[in-house]
Length: 247
Image 1 (tube, rainbow, N blue to C red):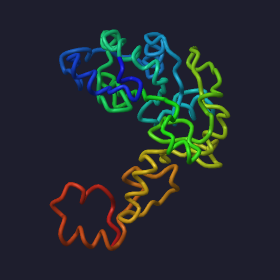
Image 2: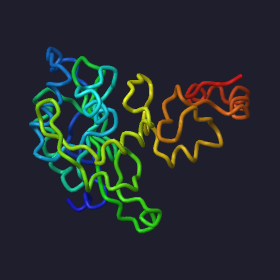
Image 3: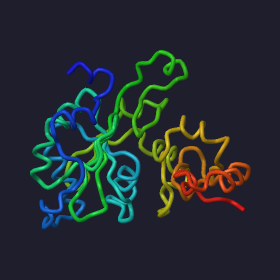
Image 4: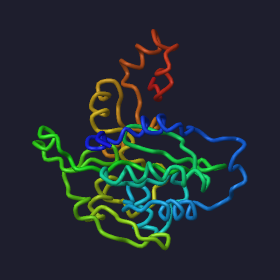
């Protein structure tokens, strides 16, 4: 699979193999498992290192549990091992998972009867010489990192299974959630939008949180000039309702 040398083309793989995307109302509707059980099944079905990222890493380190209000589990897999994830899709479907989304860098598995889902994201070293010139070494969470979080990843026991977390994990969590990362805060997302996207949006929207946290609809708002323009000319546009509009 030569295309895995650059990126796994997850969407292309899913489409070319005929895997359906989205839940089937007639299949697996009677399955009832806890979030813990779903993650254990995922772990046991994939013969690769699984890295706990974002809120899942936060829950594992801070709470030793899945954060109850976290809407998803964030799992990282090295680019070189991602073909094994895709090869395991039939088994995952037999267990009851379904493919909710298939994107360039993320395979999202849905769970019957639950809003909770699992994002399996590509983790890869930065090879682009221009990007490396700026000091970036790793790409995951849809963003670039200068730290060797993955090279130094450490093993942890979580949900009675062995996973890996970026190391030093306290530095990683502080970078994503701020110095108060050990204090539970229900509505504080991390890296919802890639940093480059935030830079391109900055002339048009105002971020209420720092760059590491911004991106959810509720934590950004249109700048006054953009709000006035949209209210006058763009109320019919889909983007009009995307963010709150300051008066």
